[in-house]
Length: 412
Image (cartoon, rainbow, N blue to C red; front, side):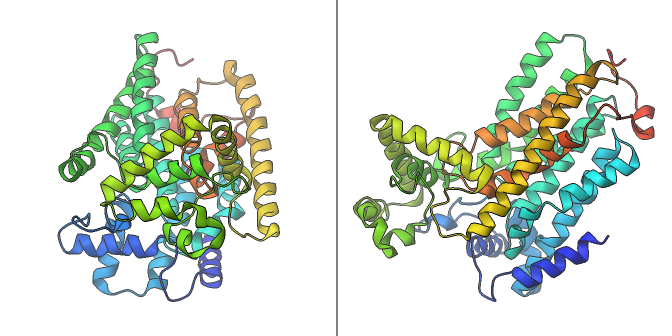
């Protein structure tokens, strides 16, 4: 409970002013659109009002907009409150495998991960993504250790909802379904792989309504959103001193050092949102093939941006960069230690079937952001997986709730 007032105080202290900032304008625009019975703005040149964001957070914001809540109240309800819910769910997840004390310590470790404070400045998708990913992790653990079948549905729907929040996770859901199919074929007769396959199938099936909607207005199959083309282009065509860092379109026409890109942006700025996104994608492929070394360097820069907040391409206090880097180095070191312990203890404890799904979430959640330009916010949703790994050790025990679960075949 002490974390909730801490989050509220931090949000009130560091949040932006009374005017919308970051993604708030477009997210609130989608919430208004939902209240008027539609979602994407069709027939306009406004790309950020087309399919820039998934509908999960706008659906949550719509009742607040209808009630006329001020922006600061929306920030509190979508920032501190969701982050607190994520920590509570994470404690319940850890309690499935660890003792109560270690589960509480692990939950505080997640809740006091300092970079999360940056998310509390404005309405953002990452806090909701944290809740949904941890809910998926909980459902996966209960389902794969032989719990009731309702946890298969919980995990699958949580993953599908995560796609509706961060649409790039749609590719992750499809990739996980492919891996689950291979795992099931290789482990015939085992219950855990079959349940994981069912979870992934529910997740992908849950994405069909969104894909059907995007197809109805774009005519393209597996079209998740129109924000990816711009990110892909910046990775392929960034300035040598920026290493593919992302910039908003309006900054190209505002900042003098981005002037060389203005002719291309003037061309695409006259296109409809879908055509603009496809033009960015086509130009990104052309640039990557024409300058493969520069593209490879920029992809590497995407990795360091997510892990160490450098080079971001925008002015950021060196103190913030160093602080974020220290937090990430410490977490990665603890996660590496937990991974070693997890491997050592694999023959001494009930088998952790959830390790493969969690590794997929972590690995694919990182890899999917390497090609489009990335920043530390892209890594935030998978931080719970790193903390979960860091919390593991040879002293783990199966909680009473886990012990009562029906064991799957092959569970020692």
